[in-house]
Amino acid sequence: MELRLYDTMTKEKRVFTPIDPSNVRMYVCGPTVYDFAHIGNARPVIVFDVLFRLLRHIYGDKHVTYVRNITDVDDKINDRAVRDFPGLPLNEAIRKVTETTANQFQADVAALGCLPPTHQPRATEFVLPRPDGKADMVTLIKQLIARGNAYEAGGEVLFDTQSMPDYGALSGRKLEEQKAGARVAVDVHKKNPADFVLWKLSSENEPGWDSPWGRGRPGWHIECSAMSAAYLGDVFDIHGGGLDLIFPHHENEIAQSRCAHGTSVMANYWMHNGFLQVEGEKMSKSLGNFFTINELLTTDRFGGRKWPGEVLRLAMLKTHYRSPIDWTVSSLEEAFQNIGNWNDALSPHALSNMPGSYALPDEILEAVADDLGFSKVIAQMHQWAKLSKTGDASAAKKLAGTADFLDLGRSGWDKTLQEFLFKTATDNALNSKFDELIAAREDARARKDFKESDRIRDELAAMGVVLKDGRDADGRPVTTWEIAR
Ligand SMILES: [Zn+2]
Image (cartoon, rainbow, N blue to C red; front, side, top):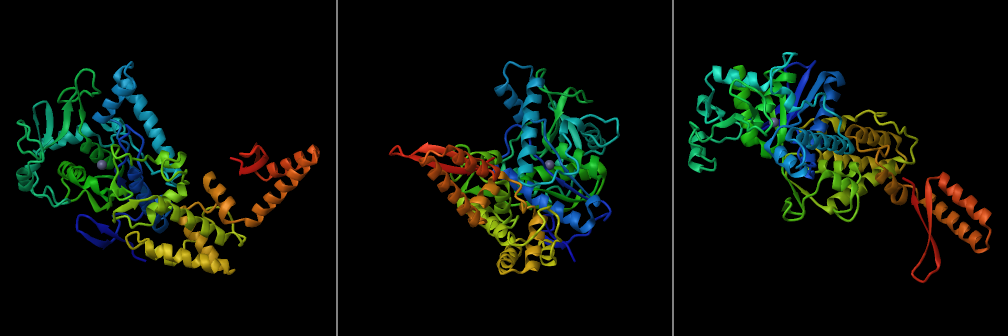
């Protein structure tokens, strides 16, 4: 079995060969923790979670190191801290913003069925030289200055893009074009408009660290160069992120890391997921189509209902990771139906509910190993569901093995999903049993046999059904039921 991945650097699918199969190393740019993560942020998290699972499957759980950083120093964070906690000293306000946002992020992505990465370093812990000797930003910047790739000017340390002959190789942008394009603001102290900030001075009430260039803070790009080197070394296997990060972020990470370490590459494979839009439009707060992961999970703002994490996960995976995705209510409804159908197909078979009980079928491994191909996976799952409904136990096991591998919640790890499956997809027999019991209880109440009506209520409660007695528009008593949460 060959794993093939599309590499943005060479613009082709290539056979994946790890530097060291006993420690396959992947870095993915993580969130800047100033606000709740939106649904577009969920895409790389889910996509690279599947790749992480695939690598673990191929090389072994203990032989893959996945690092996803947390950017907890950024001017957006400072602005948010000032806005939300005007009474607090800035550093305390920043801590509040970053801690609550980072915790929320972890909860959101766990609800999407994503495994925690091996390491989740926080940028602020990698600014200054560390007692454990792991790579840090100040040392990297010193190396860049010493090697003639960076200079101090106008209260900043800047990367000298002209010092690197092949700067721009990932995005295909030439330095000349950038000059002509003039989209980069020209600061007088820069040697070249494309030069970017490694370090900048902080005012007294901004967060800052003492450095050889004065009390200041790092630029965004240097953070990832330091944290990737700290855990994965100077050169590693896979670097991932969204398409929007290719330029300037990844281009600048490459420039810093390669020049500081004197290597010809930073990572051997550069992988990028495509853009996400909502109902055919770019997601934006001003258009009112901006949705956080948390809103989709816990409110009915999108499509008038809450969506289980599995449904969001499947809806994201059904579009190939490199294609643009249109996030629509109908695509979520379809994913919801798919999961319901698969669970429905599995329910007549006496399968273990323990995730991981069944092997990953070869057909699925082969499809996913071809640059995370998904269309074949979905088609195959539908096929197995059909066979499974006719009593084919081996098809049922393959379907369960696939759902386990993708963590599509075969055991129903989300309450909303359980409720959905309970009510609509699986057990119609159970539903009619509920209706029967409720009718019997209504009869008992009508003849004022409250002992019997209470007994039936308790029987239903034991099955997880909660009754609600009320009155209809004409004042007649009605009883509705729901699954207890
Ligand atoms: Zn990064």
